[in-house]
Image 1 (tube, helix red, strand yellow):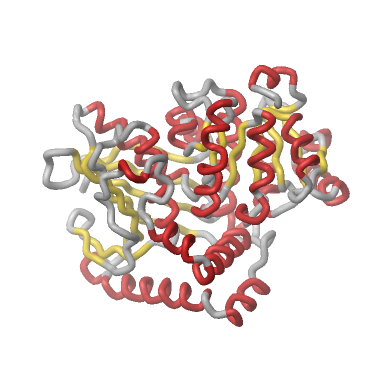
Image 2 (cartoon, one colour):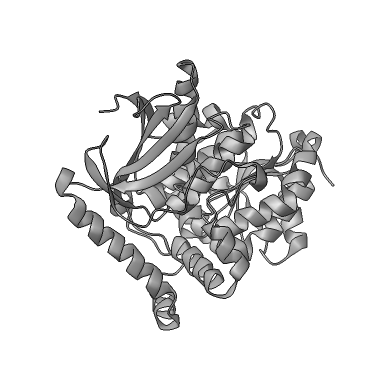
Amino acid sequence: MQTKSDQASREFDVVIWGATGFVGRLIAEYMARSNFPVRWAMAGRSHDKLERVRKEIAAEFPAAADVPLLEANADDEASLEALASKTKVIATTVGPYGLYGKKLVAACVHRGTDYCDLTGEVHFMRWAIDEFHEKAKASNTRIVPACGFDSIPSDLGVFFLADEARRRGKPLAEVRGFVTDSKGGVSGGTVASMLLVSELMMHDPDARRLLADPYALSPDRASEPNTDEGDRMTPRFDTTLDAWAAPWLMASVNMRVVRRSNALLGHSYGRMFKYTEELAMPGGRWGFVPAGLMTGGIILGMSLLALPPARKLISEKIAPGDGPSKEARENGRFTLRFLGRLEGDETPTIAVRVSGRGDPGYLATSRMIGQSALCLALDTPQPGFEGGVLTPATAMGMRLVERLRTAEMTFEVEQVR
Protein backbone atom coordinates (compact mmCIF):
# COMPACT_ATOMS: atom_id res chain seq x y z
CA MET A 1 0.00 0.00 0.00
CA GLN A 2 1.23 3.47 -0.85
CA THR A 3 0.85 6.34 1.60
CA LYS A 4 0.80 10.13 1.57
CA SER A 5 4.55 10.16 2.05
CA ASP A 6 4.88 8.72 -1.46
CA GLN A 7 2.97 11.59 -3.08
CA ALA A 8 5.90 13.96 -3.49
CA SER A 9 7.48 11.56 -5.96
CA ARG A 10 4.35 10.95 -8.01
CA GLU A 11 4.29 11.86 -11.65
CA PHE A 12 1.10 13.99 -11.56
CA ASP A 13 -0.77 16.30 -9.24
CA VAL A 14 -4.17 15.74 -10.88
CA VAL A 15 -5.57 13.15 -13.26
CA ILE A 16 -8.95 13.70 -14.93
CA TRP A 17 -10.57 10.28 -15.22
CA GLY A 18 -13.25 10.23 -17.93
CA ALA A 19 -11.71 13.02 -20.00
CA THR A 20 -13.39 11.81 -23.20
CA GLY A 21 -16.85 12.31 -21.67
CA PHE A 22 -18.75 15.58 -21.94
CA VAL A 23 -17.99 17.04 -18.50
CA GLY A 24 -14.56 15.40 -18.33
CA ARG A 25 -13.61 17.22 -21.49
CA LEU A 26 -14.87 20.50 -20.04
CA ILE A 27 -12.62 20.01 -17.02
CA ALA A 28 -9.67 19.36 -19.33
CA GLU A 29 -10.51 22.53 -21.27
CA TYR A 30 -10.68 24.47 -18.02
CA MET A 31 -7.28 23.18 -16.94
CA ALA A 32 -5.75 23.97 -20.34
CA ARG A 33 -7.34 27.43 -20.58
CA SER A 34 -6.26 28.42 -17.08
CA ASN A 35 -2.78 26.97 -17.43
CA PHE A 36 -2.50 26.20 -13.73
CA PRO A 37 1.03 25.44 -12.48
CA VAL A 38 0.28 21.76 -11.92
CA ARG A 39 1.23 18.48 -13.52
CA TRP A 40 -1.97 17.00 -14.88
CA ALA A 41 -3.06 14.26 -17.25
CA MET A 42 -6.18 13.02 -19.02
CA ALA A 43 -7.29 9.42 -18.54
CA GLY A 44 -9.88 7.13 -20.07
CA ARG A 45 -10.50 3.72 -21.61
CA SER A 46 -9.43 4.51 -25.16
CA HIS A 47 -6.07 6.04 -26.08
CA ASP A 48 -7.39 6.93 -29.54
CA LYS A 49 -10.34 8.86 -28.12
CA LEU A 50 -8.10 10.60 -25.61
CA GLU A 51 -5.71 11.59 -28.37
CA ARG A 52 -8.60 12.97 -30.43
CA VAL A 53 -9.92 15.02 -27.50
CA ARG A 54 -6.45 16.34 -26.70
CA LYS A 55 -5.95 17.42 -30.29
CA GLU A 56 -9.30 19.22 -30.38
CA ILE A 57 -8.62 21.02 -27.11
CA ALA A 58 -5.10 21.96 -28.20
CA ALA A 59 -6.49 23.62 -31.33
CA GLU A 60 -8.00 26.25 -29.02
CA PHE A 61 -5.64 25.98 -26.05
CA PRO A 62 -2.13 25.05 -27.25
CA ALA A 63 -1.02 24.22 -23.68
CA ALA A 64 -3.02 20.99 -23.97
CA ALA A 65 -0.88 19.60 -26.79
CA ASP A 66 1.63 18.01 -24.42
CA VAL A 67 -0.77 16.82 -21.73
CA PRO A 68 -0.03 13.13 -20.99
CA LEU A 69 -2.67 10.49 -21.71
CA LEU A 70 -3.29 7.50 -19.46
CA GLU A 71 -5.38 4.40 -20.12
CA ALA A 72 -7.42 2.49 -17.55
CA ASN A 73 -10.70 0.61 -17.32
CA ALA A 74 -13.39 1.03 -14.68
CA ASP A 75 -13.77 -2.77 -14.47
CA ASP A 76 -10.04 -3.53 -14.24
CA GLU A 77 -8.74 -3.19 -10.68
CA ALA A 78 -5.10 -3.49 -11.71
CA SER A 79 -5.35 -0.66 -14.24
CA LEU A 80 -7.09 1.56 -11.68
CA GLU A 81 -4.42 0.78 -9.07
CA ALA A 82 -1.76 1.74 -11.60
CA LEU A 83 -3.62 4.96 -12.41
CA ALA A 84 -4.01 5.91 -8.75
CA SER A 85 -0.34 5.24 -8.03
CA LYS A 86 0.73 7.91 -10.54
CA THR A 87 -1.08 10.93 -9.09
CA LYS A 88 -1.90 12.86 -5.93
CA VAL A 89 -5.57 13.36 -6.92
CA ILE A 90 -8.07 11.75 -9.28
CA ALA A 91 -11.08 13.79 -10.38
CA THR A 92 -13.59 11.39 -11.89
CA THR A 93 -16.64 12.03 -14.06
CA VAL A 94 -17.25 8.34 -14.84
CA GLY A 95 -20.75 7.51 -13.64
CA PRO A 96 -23.22 6.28 -12.65
CA TYR A 97 -20.85 5.88 -9.73
CA GLY A 98 -22.84 3.06 -8.19
CA LEU A 99 -21.89 1.04 -11.28
CA TYR A 100 -18.49 2.43 -12.26
CA GLY A 101 -17.04 4.18 -9.22
CA LYS A 102 -16.51 1.54 -6.55
CA LYS A 103 -13.28 0.00 -7.78
CA LEU A 104 -11.73 3.43 -8.27
CA VAL A 105 -12.56 4.46 -4.68
CA ALA A 106 -10.96 1.23 -3.46
CA ALA A 107 -7.85 1.84 -5.58
CA CYS A 108 -7.51 5.42 -4.32
CA VAL A 109 -7.78 4.40 -0.66
CA HIS A 110 -5.28 1.58 -1.22
CA ARG A 111 -2.81 3.90 -2.94
CA GLY A 112 -3.29 6.95 -0.68
CA THR A 113 -4.66 9.01 -3.57
CA ASP A 114 -7.17 11.77 -2.90
CA TYR A 115 -10.40 11.54 -4.90
CA CYS A 116 -13.27 13.82 -5.94
CA ASP A 117 -16.31 13.15 -8.11
CA LEU A 118 -19.63 14.56 -9.33
CA THR A 119 -21.98 11.99 -7.86
CA GLY A 120 -25.48 12.75 -6.69
CA GLU A 121 -26.07 9.11 -5.76
CA VAL A 122 -26.79 8.88 -2.04
CA HIS A 123 -26.58 5.08 -2.07
CA PHE A 124 -23.07 5.24 -3.56
CA MET A 125 -21.92 7.75 -0.97
CA ARG A 126 -23.36 5.58 1.80
CA TRP A 127 -21.52 2.57 0.38
CA ALA A 128 -18.24 4.52 0.31
CA ILE A 129 -18.75 5.65 3.92
CA ASP A 130 -19.48 2.15 5.17
CA GLU A 131 -16.70 0.47 3.25
CA PHE A 132 -13.90 3.02 3.30
CA HIS A 133 -14.34 5.90 5.74
CA GLU A 134 -12.21 4.33 8.48
CA LYS A 135 -9.67 2.93 6.02
CA ALA A 136 -9.36 6.33 4.33
CA LYS A 137 -8.85 7.98 7.73
CA ALA A 138 -6.12 5.48 8.56
CA SER A 139 -4.29 6.17 5.27
CA ASN A 140 -4.90 9.97 5.33
CA THR A 141 -6.78 9.71 2.06
CA ARG A 142 -9.59 12.15 1.31
CA ILE A 143 -12.51 10.69 -0.64
CA VAL A 144 -14.78 13.63 -1.51
CA PRO A 145 -17.99 12.91 -3.43
CA ALA A 146 -20.43 15.55 -4.71
CA CYS A 147 -17.97 18.18 -5.95
CA GLY A 148 -20.19 19.69 -8.65
CA PHE A 149 -23.53 21.51 -8.65
CA ASP A 150 -24.42 18.50 -6.52
CA SER A 151 -23.52 19.63 -3.82
CA ILE A 152 -20.89 22.40 -3.60
CA PRO A 153 -23.17 25.49 -3.66
CA SER A 154 -25.36 24.04 -0.90
CA ASP A 155 -22.61 22.49 1.22
CA LEU A 156 -20.25 25.46 1.08
CA GLY A 157 -23.11 27.97 1.21
CA VAL A 158 -24.30 26.61 4.56
CA PHE A 159 -20.68 26.26 5.75
CA PHE A 160 -20.10 29.93 4.88
CA LEU A 161 -23.32 30.93 6.65
CA ALA A 162 -22.36 28.95 9.77
CA ASP A 163 -19.02 30.78 9.84
CA GLU A 164 -20.89 34.10 9.83
CA ALA A 165 -23.17 32.84 12.61
CA ARG A 166 -20.12 32.02 14.74
CA ARG A 167 -18.93 35.60 14.30
CA ARG A 168 -22.21 36.66 15.88
CA GLY A 169 -21.71 34.32 18.81
CA LYS A 170 -24.64 31.95 18.28
CA PRO A 171 -25.15 28.54 16.65
CA LEU A 172 -27.66 28.07 13.87
CA ALA A 173 -31.09 26.72 14.68
CA GLU A 174 -32.25 26.47 11.08
CA VAL A 175 -31.18 27.23 7.51
CA ARG A 176 -33.63 27.44 4.64
CA GLY A 177 -31.96 27.16 1.24
CA PHE A 178 -33.62 28.43 -1.93
CA VAL A 179 -32.62 28.14 -5.58
CA THR A 180 -33.71 31.60 -6.73
CA ASP A 181 -32.32 31.43 -10.27
CA SER A 182 -31.09 28.59 -12.44
CA LYS A 183 -30.59 28.34 -16.18
CA GLY A 184 -29.11 25.17 -17.61
CA GLY A 185 -29.74 21.72 -18.96
CA VAL A 186 -29.84 18.27 -17.38
CA SER A 187 -26.79 16.17 -18.19
CA GLY A 188 -26.94 12.69 -19.64
CA GLY A 189 -24.88 11.49 -16.69
CA THR A 190 -27.43 12.93 -14.26
CA VAL A 191 -30.24 11.16 -16.08
CA ALA A 192 -28.29 7.88 -16.00
CA SER A 193 -27.86 8.27 -12.24
CA MET A 194 -31.57 9.03 -11.81
CA LEU A 195 -32.46 5.90 -13.75
CA LEU A 196 -30.14 3.82 -11.58
CA VAL A 197 -31.64 5.27 -8.39
CA SER A 198 -35.20 4.68 -9.61
CA GLU A 199 -34.27 1.06 -10.38
CA LEU A 200 -32.96 0.63 -6.85
CA MET A 201 -36.07 2.24 -5.37
CA MET A 202 -38.30 -0.19 -7.24
CA HIS A 203 -36.46 -3.39 -6.41
CA ASP A 204 -34.49 -2.87 -3.19
CA PRO A 205 -36.39 -2.20 0.07
CA ASP A 206 -33.15 -1.34 1.91
CA ALA A 207 -32.34 1.27 -0.73
CA ARG A 208 -35.83 2.76 -0.37
CA ARG A 209 -35.39 3.08 3.38
CA LEU A 210 -31.94 4.60 2.98
CA LEU A 211 -32.99 7.16 0.39
CA ALA A 212 -36.00 8.19 2.49
CA ASP A 213 -33.85 8.88 5.56
CA PRO A 214 -32.97 12.59 6.00
CA TYR A 215 -29.78 11.50 7.79
CA ALA A 216 -28.80 8.82 5.28
CA LEU A 217 -25.18 10.03 5.20
CA SER A 218 -24.76 10.59 8.92
CA PRO A 219 -21.57 9.15 10.46
CA ASP A 220 -23.60 8.08 13.51
CA ARG A 221 -27.30 7.79 12.70
CA ALA A 222 -28.34 6.93 16.25
CA SER A 223 -26.91 10.19 17.62
CA GLU A 224 -28.81 12.48 15.25
CA PRO A 225 -31.51 14.66 16.85
CA ASN A 226 -34.12 13.86 14.16
CA THR A 227 -35.07 17.51 13.86
CA ASP A 228 -35.39 17.27 10.08
CA GLU A 229 -38.34 15.72 8.33
CA GLY A 230 -38.43 13.83 5.06
CA ASP A 231 -38.02 15.55 1.70
CA ARG A 232 -40.63 18.20 1.02
CA MET A 233 -42.94 17.27 -1.87
CA THR A 234 -45.58 20.02 -1.63
CA PRO A 235 -45.48 23.76 -2.42
CA ARG A 236 -45.50 26.25 0.44
CA PHE A 237 -45.42 29.99 0.96
CA ASP A 238 -42.33 31.43 2.64
CA THR A 239 -43.03 34.61 4.54
CA THR A 240 -39.38 35.71 4.69
CA LEU A 241 -38.97 35.49 0.93
CA ASP A 242 -42.54 36.65 0.35
CA ALA A 243 -42.70 34.00 -2.36
CA TRP A 244 -43.91 30.47 -3.03
CA ALA A 245 -41.45 27.60 -2.99
CA ALA A 246 -41.65 24.26 -4.79
CA PRO A 247 -39.70 21.02 -4.30
CA TRP A 248 -36.18 21.14 -5.75
CA LEU A 249 -35.03 18.05 -7.62
CA MET A 250 -31.50 18.06 -6.21
CA ALA A 251 -32.49 18.83 -2.61
CA SER A 252 -32.65 15.17 -1.59
CA VAL A 253 -28.91 14.90 -2.22
CA ASN A 254 -27.79 18.35 -1.10
CA MET A 255 -29.63 18.26 2.23
CA ARG A 256 -28.05 14.96 3.20
CA VAL A 257 -24.56 16.20 2.30
CA VAL A 258 -25.09 19.35 4.39
CA ARG A 259 -26.27 17.29 7.36
CA ARG A 260 -23.22 15.02 7.05
CA SER A 261 -20.98 18.10 7.12
CA ASN A 262 -22.62 19.31 10.31
CA ALA A 263 -22.23 15.89 11.95
CA LEU A 264 -18.58 15.49 10.88
CA LEU A 265 -17.88 18.96 12.26
CA GLY A 266 -19.19 17.88 15.65
CA HIS A 267 -22.55 19.56 15.01
CA SER A 268 -20.80 22.93 14.98
CA TYR A 269 -23.63 24.45 12.92
CA GLY A 270 -25.93 23.65 15.84
CA ARG A 271 -26.87 20.51 17.76
CA MET A 272 -30.55 20.92 16.80
CA PHE A 273 -29.72 22.33 13.36
CA LYS A 274 -32.41 21.93 10.67
CA TYR A 275 -31.94 22.32 6.92
CA THR A 276 -34.35 22.46 4.00
CA GLU A 277 -33.80 23.30 0.35
CA GLU A 278 -36.42 24.38 -2.18
CA LEU A 279 -36.95 26.14 -5.49
CA ALA A 280 -38.17 29.74 -5.09
CA MET A 281 -40.85 30.60 -7.63
CA PRO A 282 -41.40 33.98 -9.33
CA GLY A 283 -44.60 35.97 -8.97
CA GLY A 284 -44.60 36.72 -5.27
CA ARG A 285 -47.89 35.69 -3.68
CA TRP A 286 -49.18 34.60 -7.09
CA GLY A 287 -46.37 32.11 -7.43
CA PHE A 288 -48.56 29.28 -6.19
CA VAL A 289 -49.48 28.55 -9.82
CA PRO A 290 -45.93 27.85 -11.08
CA ALA A 291 -45.14 26.19 -7.73
CA GLY A 292 -48.04 23.80 -8.20
CA LEU A 293 -47.07 23.09 -11.80
CA MET A 294 -43.46 22.45 -10.82
CA THR A 295 -44.52 20.08 -8.05
CA GLY A 296 -46.84 18.21 -10.41
CA GLY A 297 -44.07 17.94 -12.99
CA ILE A 298 -41.65 16.43 -10.47
CA ILE A 299 -44.23 13.91 -9.27
CA LEU A 300 -45.10 13.00 -12.86
CA GLY A 301 -41.42 12.62 -13.78
CA MET A 302 -40.75 10.37 -10.80
CA SER A 303 -43.79 8.27 -11.72
CA LEU A 304 -42.59 7.91 -15.30
CA LEU A 305 -39.19 6.70 -14.14
CA ALA A 306 -40.97 3.75 -12.54
CA LEU A 307 -42.35 2.63 -15.93
CA PRO A 308 -39.98 0.45 -18.00
CA PRO A 309 -41.11 1.87 -21.41
CA ALA A 310 -40.57 5.43 -20.19
CA ARG A 311 -37.20 4.51 -18.70
CA LYS A 312 -36.13 2.96 -22.00
CA LEU A 313 -37.23 6.00 -23.99
CA ILE A 314 -35.46 8.42 -21.62
CA SER A 315 -32.24 6.41 -21.69
CA GLU A 316 -32.29 6.40 -25.49
CA LYS A 317 -32.98 10.12 -25.80
CA ILE A 318 -30.54 11.42 -23.14
CA ALA A 319 -27.41 9.33 -22.85
CA PRO A 320 -24.22 9.95 -20.83
CA GLY A 321 -21.91 12.13 -22.91
CA ASP A 322 -24.73 14.28 -24.26
CA GLY A 323 -24.73 17.99 -23.48
CA PRO A 324 -25.69 21.50 -24.60
CA SER A 325 -23.89 23.72 -27.07
CA LYS A 326 -21.04 26.01 -26.07
CA GLU A 327 -23.33 29.02 -26.34
CA ALA A 328 -25.95 27.43 -24.09
CA ARG A 329 -23.28 26.46 -21.55
CA GLU A 330 -21.89 29.97 -21.40
CA ASN A 331 -25.34 31.56 -21.09
CA GLY A 332 -26.24 29.47 -18.05
CA ARG A 333 -26.22 30.69 -14.45
CA PHE A 334 -27.39 29.88 -10.93
CA THR A 335 -28.13 31.64 -7.65
CA LEU A 336 -28.92 30.13 -4.27
CA ARG A 337 -29.89 32.03 -1.10
CA PHE A 338 -29.53 30.61 2.39
CA LEU A 339 -31.57 32.14 5.20
CA GLY A 340 -30.22 31.42 8.66
CA ARG A 341 -32.09 31.61 11.95
CA LEU A 342 -29.89 31.74 15.03
CA GLU A 343 -30.80 29.94 18.23
CA GLY A 344 -33.15 32.12 20.28
CA ASP A 345 -34.38 34.10 17.25
CA GLU A 346 -37.88 33.83 15.86
CA THR A 347 -37.04 34.61 12.24
CA PRO A 348 -33.98 34.36 9.95
CA THR A 349 -31.43 37.12 10.56
CA ILE A 350 -28.55 36.09 8.27
CA ALA A 351 -28.66 35.58 4.51
CA VAL A 352 -25.91 34.28 2.23
CA ARG A 353 -25.98 34.32 -1.55
CA VAL A 354 -24.03 31.83 -3.66
CA SER A 355 -24.05 32.39 -7.41
CA GLY A 356 -22.13 31.40 -10.48
CA ARG A 357 -21.85 31.92 -14.19
CA GLY A 358 -22.26 29.11 -16.71
CA ASP A 359 -24.59 26.16 -17.07
CA PRO A 360 -24.76 24.72 -13.53
CA GLY A 361 -24.46 21.06 -14.54
CA TYR A 362 -21.75 21.57 -17.16
CA LEU A 363 -19.58 24.69 -17.33
CA ALA A 364 -19.95 25.74 -13.68
CA THR A 365 -19.60 22.15 -12.51
CA SER A 366 -16.37 21.71 -14.50
CA ARG A 367 -14.90 24.67 -12.62
CA MET A 368 -16.14 23.36 -9.26
CA ILE A 369 -14.57 19.92 -9.58
CA GLY A 370 -11.48 21.36 -11.26
CA GLN A 371 -10.89 23.67 -8.31
CA SER A 372 -11.72 20.86 -5.88
CA ALA A 373 -9.01 18.71 -7.44
CA LEU A 374 -6.51 21.58 -7.28
CA CYS A 375 -7.44 22.27 -3.66
CA LEU A 376 -6.88 18.62 -2.70
CA ALA A 377 -3.60 18.52 -4.60
CA LEU A 378 -2.06 21.83 -3.57
CA ASP A 379 -3.63 23.17 -0.37
CA THR A 380 -3.04 22.11 3.22
CA PRO A 381 -5.73 19.70 4.47
CA GLN A 382 -8.31 20.95 6.95
CA PRO A 383 -7.07 20.09 10.47
CA GLY A 384 -8.80 16.94 11.65
CA PHE A 385 -9.92 16.01 8.14
CA GLU A 386 -6.74 14.62 6.60
CA GLY A 387 -8.58 11.43 5.66
CA GLY A 388 -11.99 9.80 5.38
CA VAL A 389 -15.06 9.88 3.16
CA LEU A 390 -15.71 13.58 3.52
CA THR A 391 -17.80 16.43 2.12
CA PRO A 392 -16.52 19.49 0.24
CA ALA A 393 -17.07 21.61 3.37
CA THR A 394 -15.16 19.29 5.71
CA ALA A 395 -12.37 18.32 3.30
CA MET A 396 -11.66 21.80 1.92
CA GLY A 397 -13.88 24.42 3.57
CA MET A 398 -12.85 28.06 3.18
CA ARG A 399 -9.85 27.14 1.06
CA LEU A 400 -12.24 25.91 -1.62
CA VAL A 401 -14.53 28.93 -1.14
CA GLU A 402 -11.60 31.22 -1.92
CA ARG A 403 -10.61 29.15 -4.94
CA LEU A 404 -14.15 29.22 -6.32
CA ARG A 405 -14.26 32.99 -5.94
CA THR A 406 -11.51 33.08 -8.56
CA ALA A 407 -13.61 30.76 -10.76
CA GLU A 408 -16.62 33.02 -11.37
CA MET A 409 -18.52 32.09 -8.22
CA THR A 410 -19.75 34.48 -5.52
CA PHE A 411 -20.15 33.86 -1.79
CA GLU A 412 -21.46 36.89 0.09
CA VAL A 413 -23.49 37.88 3.12
CA GLU A 414 -26.72 39.75 2.30
CA GLN A 415 -29.60 41.39 4.07
CA VAL A 416 -32.39 38.92 4.84
CA ARG A 417 -34.97 41.06 2.98
